[in-house]
Image 1 (cartoon, rainbow, N blue to C red):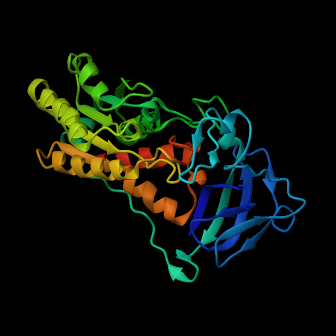
Image 2 (cartoon, rainbow, N blue to C red):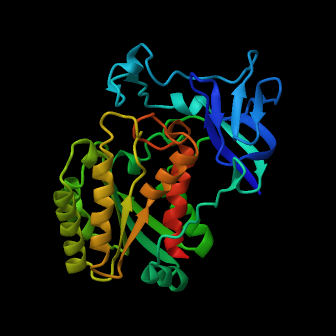
Image 3 (cartoon, helix red, strand yellow):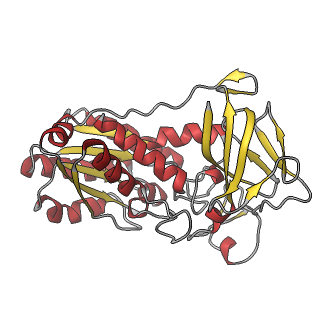
Length: 330
């Protein structure tokens, strides 16, 4: 099996971690693809452990993530009180390397199964795509759903689109359909925002509503019961005014586990509430990016998947979002 473009960031330890033990490294490249790095010259490989280590003369950049100085370390701390790097824009993107390698689904000599993508089934939406060749989607979320830290949004190579645009392209190309996606997301918002903006959404034609909140709810410690009430209000209003509309609840990626404001128990509780809500109707499906991210963080490091080192995805994770959402339409 070959993995293409797996992201790896070398931090102050000068090490990078692969998801699987590599049988052969095919290439290491910068995110923009302009720079190619060479085994023995820039890095050495510990195959069994799935670890890449920088050489003394390496051209591969490494980045300090904790206990640094300067404006990027002035806002957040980790669970131990150490300063934690926080950088919007494309700083982390510039340090994340693309690794292409062969593997046989093992890590440290033990089988490591691939993560399968399948969220559920949006039967009405698929029927529309196959018969009418058109679909109207509304997206409602926070900064992640605004496209935060996707390279197209930060205007840096390779200009990869955020997850919702990837999803629209996949649907359009797969079904030869016209996809109309309206994005009502707003950075910094919690699930209460969904209730406020919903009237604007249900006034328009709508086949699928994607609701993606939780990150800011957890940071501000919104009680799980309140989170559930906010989403339930949206569900009830949509079912009242758009009874044929299917609803997707997105449990987003987990934030940096060592961030002092990660509040992971809140994220776990929100996912449980989403599962309770999904039992209301077959027209409600869950896309669980939370469990996906939790699994990936155990195999690699959070810094490989983030765009700001705190709570935003990079290009790779935007792609995983899109893949999980697309699995609803298969």
